[in-house]
Length: 235
Image 1 (cartoon, helix red, strand yellow):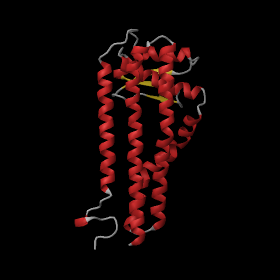
Image 2 (cartoon, rainbow, N blue to C red; image 1 turned 90 degrees about the horizontal axis):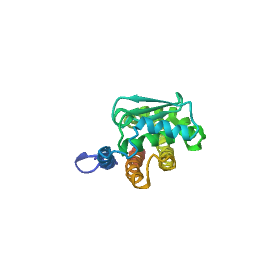
Image 3 (cartoon, helix red, strand yellow; image 1 turned 60 degrees about the vertical axis):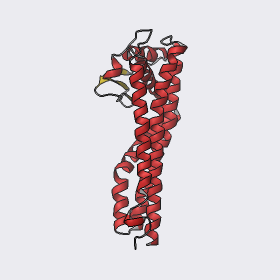
Image 4 (cartoon, one colour; image 1 turned 60 degrees about the horizontal axis):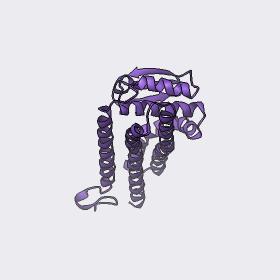
């Protein structure tokens, strides 16, 4: 007797869903790092650094209350709407490469979204507390319900994980829109011509795919939870 959800020799076949998500995420992440590294070696004709690019774009958008600061790490760039702070990683802040300028412009896209009250960004910000709670507590609660056959805990775990998946889903239009705004601003401000913008576009597209892969992996995990919960009901 192996029970529902268990395959031959007592192995849980639903683990394959996790492996599929992991492989997809790793492949997309490797592609992103490779693309970033490639265009990090190509200097921009404007010779502007990531920080200078961000400042010009923000000024062109009429945004003067956002500070630009360097932070440690690689690809740790982000915009903090609470602090109105645009943080650029070390390989971006002082670099004059196409990759650095593209990433800096992307983060400016988020600052512009905030200033223009872009609805998906507001929804995403509102979901942050729930998503954090879901990502940290969903699995412990679900496992407790699974081990002790407590259906309400199984359901709660699934609902919490669903909230985390919903957060990732809302993140997609926010990221794609920020990249679109970035490319428009790079050309309208004269920081990049159409030829160079093609390189920046490839960097931003590769970065956007990491969010798509993360969502796909989470959906596979959610599917696994639903399968396991259904199997427990039949035990």
